Image (cartoon, rainbow, N blue to C red):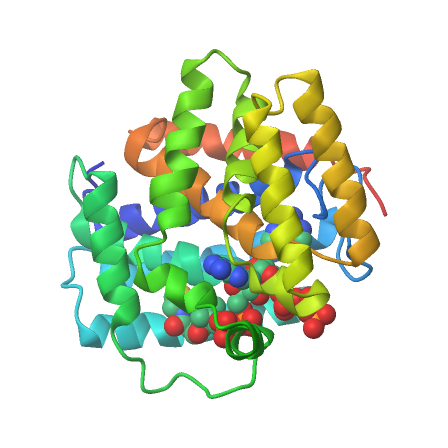
Length: 306
Ligand SMILES: CC(C)(COP(=O)(O)OP(=O)(O)OC[C@H]1O[C@@H](n2cnc3c(N)ncnc32)[C@H](O[C@H]2O[C@H](COP(=O)(O)OP(=O)(O)OP(=O)(O)O)[C@@H](O)[C@H]2O)[C@@H]1O)[C@@H](O)C(=O)NCCC(=O)NCCS
Ligand SMILES: Nc1ncnc2[nH]cnc12
């Protein structure tokens, strides 16, 4: 991927990031999460709200990409994207009237956007991407608040490292778990939907998702890890056993009020990186294609209400 200008880079990355968020929420059936047919463990979220939230974030991804275009991954950039990220969070809360839809996604896709824009290279390996994104995430952001977030509380209570730890390690659930599972599933000839569901399940098998922890505790998280692993051991969701287990896991998560929101964010980031760095998004014609797809998607779901 090589962009000719900062605005072209901003346009393509922001469109692709928004698409990845929309594709994540549209993927169905997802255990405990909002999808096209149900609201999972959520009473305050639904498909339309998630869609609206994704669209409201596009402008912030554009500004992150524009700022980071061919820039050095240094302290000044870290502080600037922190600022843009906080504006994105505000815009999200404005669009959703106060519901947290995509905080984790802003964090992950925002950092990846900055790295891809700064590289502006034809090729980037998974490992390099992980190293660079981890390095950027680890730079201190002096303007970051000290709010007692759900994530921070879960980190202290359960001694895990949460969204910040995942980022500081280069998002291994994207680069080491998500992408390989997506590619292997496609290689085995599974449909795109099955490949994406397998990817989500693989992420759910090991991510310390603070959204699950703070809503349902460590036993619920351990059980999610075990059941997701069982799905993979049974061959994944392409097979009846895997599909049955997926539906059982959905039921269990809803009963426990547990939502793997962080896993959903890691899936969105996987789809984003796959599209931009490794797969379909190569020219500005692809951008036109994305816009058309998005339009079709809006049209198809215009009548969906919850
Ligand atoms: C670094 C931040 C993301 C802040 O992190 P922190 O852990 O302090 O804060 P949280 O507010 O808890 O947000 C973390 C969100 O990250 C997702 N997540 C969870 N676990 C992981 C994980 N192991 N790896 C990666 N990502 C993870 C998750 O997001 C999803 O869940 C959200 C809903 O969560 P929650 O609010 O807990 O939801 P409810 O159960 O509904 O809560 P109640 O209201 O009922 O109590 C949903 O949004 C999903 O996206 C976690 O929520 C970051 O915010 C930060 O520091 N930003 C500063 C700006 C910046 O520097 N940006 C740079 C790049 S743009
Ligand atoms: N599909 C989804 N359902 C619930 N929370 C989420 N956070 C990000 N995506 C989500």
